[in-house]
Image 1: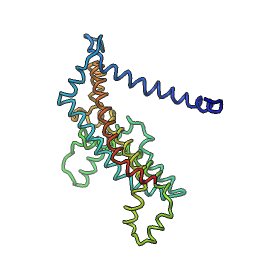
Image 2: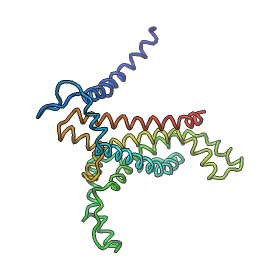
Image 3: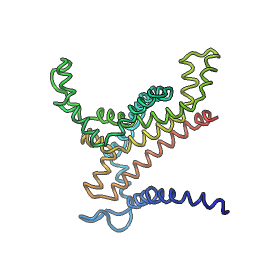
Image 4: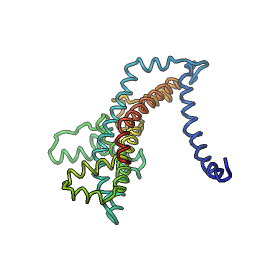
Length: 286
């Protein structure tokens, strides 16, 4: 290590320290806790180590079903966000001046509202005696109030609403980096707008699509507050089950095992997606 390299290394030390303290060590502690023995009455964990928590989690259909529901819900939310986000990202990338600021502000507006305020807003809007039911009844679309809360559909709708910006912004950034001369070249070769979209726009936007898909999927699987408030206990999702074990039953080792199982499943799917799309990503960069 030379004297010229020392300042660069020192500049990276704070970032490495933050990653170690707030990312690596908590995961190490969680994995270690997942192997701890169950504690006696009132104790979160006991002495010794065991794999019984993983055996229980992997053989109980309730916990496997909660994990499957979380992954399926995350997949649905990711697909819906992608379908909604691409047109928005296209408009955002092609806009300029005042319209760019307006569109950008509208897209990120869900992130400017606190999670509790946003969810209570959904609860007021979709309540049995809420505005939506009153409007539908006033228009004679329904003859009695509908039960709109505490189901998987409203949870997916609310999460799509808040996670759409995480899909729009990476895609818009990728589209803004596309050389505009490529569109002129495509048109000069006889390609129409639809063919240009599938042969030029869509492939070159893939770096943003890949980043947005991974980000939204991970956030959707790990979401807790929105499913807990809008979904209630009707649909078992893994984050709610983990929190219940940690704070309700006070079973830290088993809750940690469930959290590790969810993290491994999510990471495995993200890894598979990345490997399957790696060739397309390399072609785009080339």
